[in-house]
Image 1 (cartoon, one colour):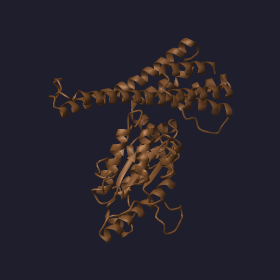
Image 2 (cartoon, helix red, strand yellow):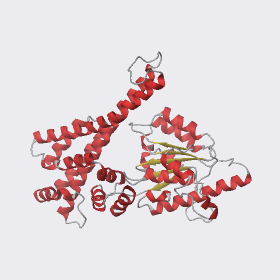
Image 3 (tube, helix red, strand yellow):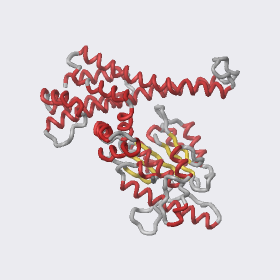
Length: 416
């Protein structure tokens, strides 16, 4: 299986990345033949289609809507850059998926590939400086030092300025792969120094196919999950494999019929907040206790005793606790946002029926509810409801108290 097989529905992007990986391999081969590593960083990318010019450059920006697979494409490219398959010498393309370079990159253990993702609200200056120091090192394996930053949109302004210096003056054989929802989510000074690749939402059929092929999901369940999530690969996989995710989604899709009065609006809002809180609690139960025990052991406390920590180590424990609190906040917001996306999809189906659009209903399991609301309201009211959900998501991004934002939304949905 080639590394590109998991990059779903992005043929144009994979062609460009494969061409860049071939040119990158040629650079390494030429340097090795000359008996030395490259002495200068890579330059600007060649214009597409220019014959004889290298398609490889030192900084890339992958953008695309949630679920498009931008991080998957970046990791696949990182693997292709580290590919050591013997077939390359025979004209094969880098990215075999089987060699040590590809395998260790994809599982996250390659010594020269740093994959950075965060559960927190932002990436700060300290973490970014650590990355920049890592990027300045020569690759241990002699190929490329690759930094994959999956959440470049979460860089604080200060962190972005730290990163800018590294992108402006990269070390030889260092490649930055940045991922963000849109090009506007990255500082203009950074994005102007990156080669931009724009991914699109993959077709529903392509997502269903990869769920069957890679995850062993039954075709009918895969098709249902892909259709319900409208091509969002990660959400489709979770919906097809996690009973709790299906139950939470089913509860969200019942909300439009439960807001006939103010009491119903307030109750529905509280239930959405509680469900998001349960998600955060579940993550904490799975991760926090293990992290805390591991840190205690590293600091010298006896495992499982809850004994006193050595003098001078309380700060490290406090730092971990703060990180866990920020992660819980992020998990709750992400869970709540996912519910709002499902709610938007519900009203999108309502609008499609009202307008007589020839598009399939994504939420076919609640078709009766969709039909009921479609026949008892107007397209104008449906649009206002969609706008109310969007306004709620924007309010949460501005750190409005979640319960207040959701209560305002449910009241607006009732008013239509």
